[in-house]
Image 1: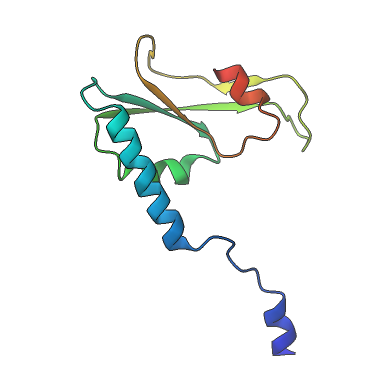
Image 2: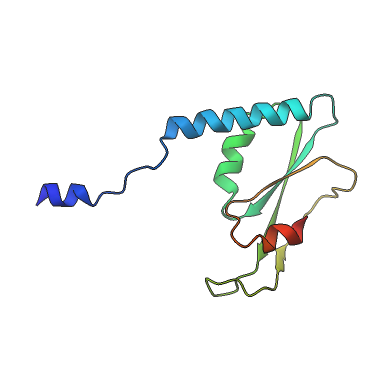
Length: 116
């Protein structure tokens, strides 16, 4: 019975160390791209991007200001309604600033397209 139980265990597709290394690489690229600028506004799309964004920001060394948006195109369904709703807008002005949007899953692209 124990062998049968083990055969149904969920195993990682990508090991934690590989993810950590890639996050550090991305942070390095962000630092290089924004070297010499007045900093960066990092916008997390709630709620799914929070943990990745926190991991990423631990390694970014350029000055950053953080804000969040909550956006939905699903309502209570698992299928996109085609209508994007802003549930929480930005609290800071991003006009003329360097902005990095951190999103968790891009499926139809509707929400991200609306943001940009």
